[in-house]
Image (tube, helix red, strand yellow):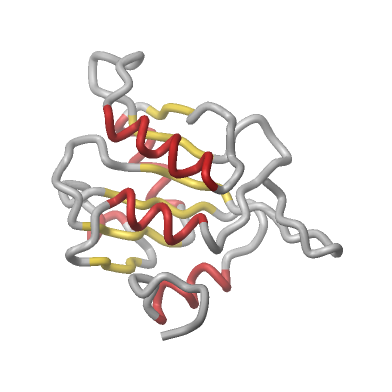
Length: 148
């Protein structure tokens, strides 16, 4: 246990977050996502829902502010404009950390490809469909301020 770090952030996830550089991406995915066959580096958070995992990650990880988007959701197949309740929860969770840009959306196979190239994939026990989010790491500036 460490001060100020959510207990669900174990040593593997903490090491991965610390090792990420500016522009590296992290995918936080639901229980249906093929994480083991997709990820170059996999961290499992069994028993943890995706929104709790997202909240823990963004409490530590600065999001990129060098472009228009630093967070993307997987869009619903055949209904790209549909925003599910879980997507609203993603946006609300990100807003707590100051990220107010709309979530980008990625078609399912595009999300899979981005996840395969991500620095790390965090697999959760989230049962809701389309509970997948991708984040791009930002910077900590010399004055100690995060990029977002």
